[in-house]
Image (cartoon, rainbow, N blue to C red; front, side):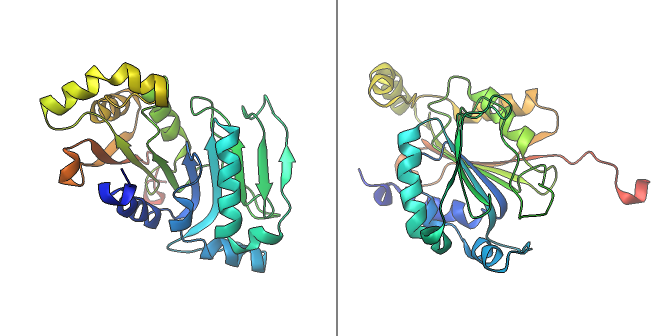
Length: 254
């Protein structure tokens, strides 16, 4: 069934509109979201070799996935999507125990990276423009249909919370799982084992409960929004927004 019919294409575009600043996409797969991002700030940053402050759009991008083959497809998509990529030779970095990665490709002075790693491992910090210190946290973290395939979804959510900027940063998830109706959930449960064996996806997980559990277990992690868009999907599509509370002292307190 095509994604546009299920309303997923529209949701990918909506999600991409929220991708601002230093962006991490976890479980990026073959890069289906890439064509919808606003790359103009990154293009400008590369052309001017200067930091860019933009209200919207991507200033640096880190894509992470456990599959090398999928990352290679994503790389080819990036070349078509981000104009400076066409003339940019990648810097290949080997597996590194220090940063918990299985290797990475770095483009455009490290402002665009594709990293082979597991979502359960510590996440690399954002990249920075040359001669600038690296920001410690991401402005936006995105994941589409990733919680169904990881071994410990709550641990992954807590991992994301550790990598997003407190206060203004956002974690935005588009997932699928249990829906509104018992008959639908029963069918998902009945066929869950076969579906996992074929696709590596547990499509019957209770995403909302997993998100709420992660929030209970993670200091400062807050659920901003949970939506179930597209009524025809009977509640099985889930849009989640999370943030981490900023507990740092304000200037007025100093």
